[in-house]
Image (cartoon, rainbow, N blue to C red; front, side, top):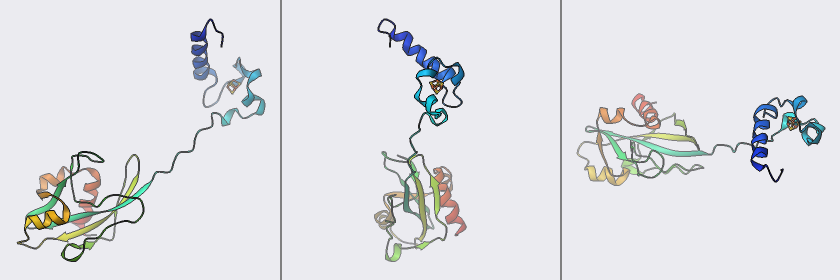
Length: 177
Ligand code: SF4
């Protein structure tokens, strides 16, 4: 770098990268650095720059509960922090790598559908087992909240506003597949 014109040097380097030494199809014949270029000497221009391999998207598993009864479908407000933060959703287990799906026992066990929900977020992909749980008439809401988290019986309008991954679970649960 010439000590008296560092700015021009940097700008020229940027221009060279934009116009001549492009990431694809570098124009080596026109390049002022050709004689000093090790990639050109080795014939490896096309392989430069070496791009880091993309990390594989992690995969997570979990369970989503379709808890239904005469008063509607049980919905919970997701924690403010984290994915889908603050949004309404169906109750779920935590979403983790590996098969760590907890199952509720006894009266709350429900029936697991054959098809899981599959969804891809920016940073991970997700499989959610869908469990339908019918709440018998007369069951105290407090018991439902204890099993599935504080929530309320959602209406059709509430369900219509659920995020995409929850809509997928809703569709499967309503179809009973
Ligand atoms: S000679 Fe080297 S620096 Fe010049 S365009 Fe080709 S690869 Fe890029």
